[in-house]
Each structure stands twice: as C-alpha cells, then as structure tokens.
Image (cartoon, rainbow, N blue to C red; front, top):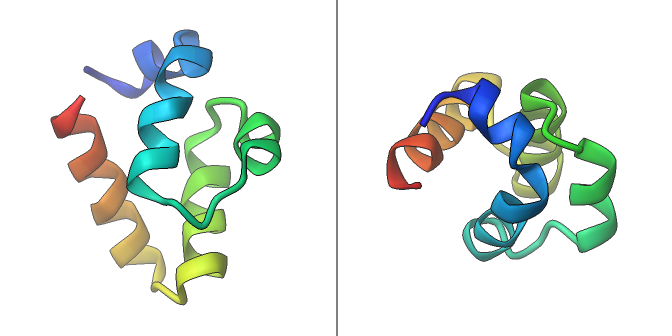
Length: 65
C-alpha cells in the first residue's frame, strides 16, 4: 500500500497505527489525519527517534499493512 492510499483510508488504518505505536493517542492520530510527515514527527517526539528512524518505521508500517 502506498501513502496516498493510507491517506484516503486513514480512519481505517488509524487502528493499525495505534497498535504499532501505542504511545500515540487517538487524538494525536486524529490530528495527524494521514499526514506522513506529522506521523513521523510525532514518532520522533514520543519515542525519541531520529528522523531517519521514524521514516524507516513508517516504511515498515506501510509494508505490514
């Protein structure tokens, strides 16, 4: 699945994101609303990851869906 598909189905995919990144709240995921950069930034903030690590995690998330 590519990111454009994720954006279009964010409400459905949000549950998968909550499972993968349990520290992200539903409100935060609602605010992200399918914005990849916002998701990567929130992962960096909550988990203390580098930008590259967050990008790699999101790429892995895409492959797992």
